[in-house]
Structure formats: C-alpha cells, structure tokens
Amino acid sequence: MTTPVQPTSNSVAGAAQTNAPGTTDNQEQPLGQDAFLQLLVTQLQNQDPLQPQDNTQMLSQLAQFSALEQMTNVANTETQVLSAIQSLQSVTSMAFEHQLIGTNISVDDGSGNTVSGQVSAIKIDQGQPQVVVNGTAYPLSQVVQMS
Image 1: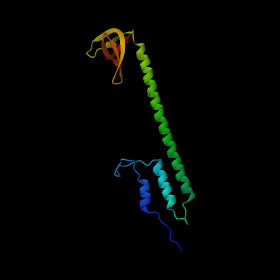
Image 2: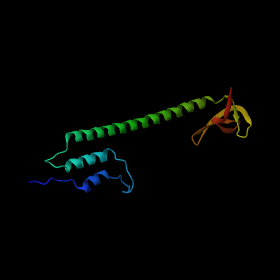
Image 3: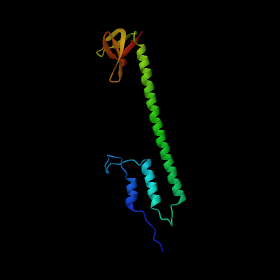
Image 4: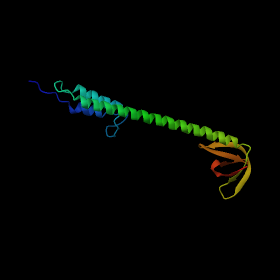
C-alpha cells in the first residue's frame, strides 16, 4: 500500500514567487513566461506517479502558456511599430521645418504682437522646433502665416 506524494506548499509557492534581481518579496510581480514554466515543472515534479495529472489540464495549461507567449510577442511588436512611427514623424517634421528656411512668415511673439520676417534658421530646443526670424527664435506652433 503506497501513500500518494503531495506537493509541498514551499516548492509551488517558491516557483510562483520568483522575483527579479533587486526586488523585494512584498512587491507584486506579474507572472511571466519563466514563472509559468517554473510552476508547470514544479507541478510535474511533485505529482503522484500513480495518479498523474489529467491530460486535459495539461493541454489547458500549455494553451494558456502559448496564449501568454503570443500576447507578449504582440505587445513587443506594437512597441516596435510605435517607435518606428515616432521616428518617422520626427524625420518628416525635420524635413518640413528645413523647407521653411528662406520663407517669409508671420509669428505671434507671445505678447499679442505679430513679427514678420524671413526664416533664417531652425532650432530644436528641448525637442521642440523653433523658427529663427530677425535673430529671435519662436516656437513653430506660434507661426500664424507663411508666404
């Protein structure tokens, strides 16, 4: 007569509570691929050999892991696409701003007055484009007329 082997709570809890280096145990970490695989391996190591895990449960867990992996891949792809779009927007914006050099424009100087003149340069200040008219830089958003 054999006694079924029960998984210890420490081994399963240990697999589910793996933390990244430099983190503390009291911070909640979302379960990722590594934690899911560790939990699955721990379940397999500690199952009763006379009553193995049901095949449908195993397939269900593998399907959940596959879905998690695909969602992670989609999130990574979305991040890469967003980065490429932002880079393209920056290049397009710089090309437009460069074409303004030599153009006559009118700019609101911020105090309600309009300054007119030819754009002599384009400046980038803290990531924001500025047009230089008559030696003074104005944000591109303050251009009111181009001719």
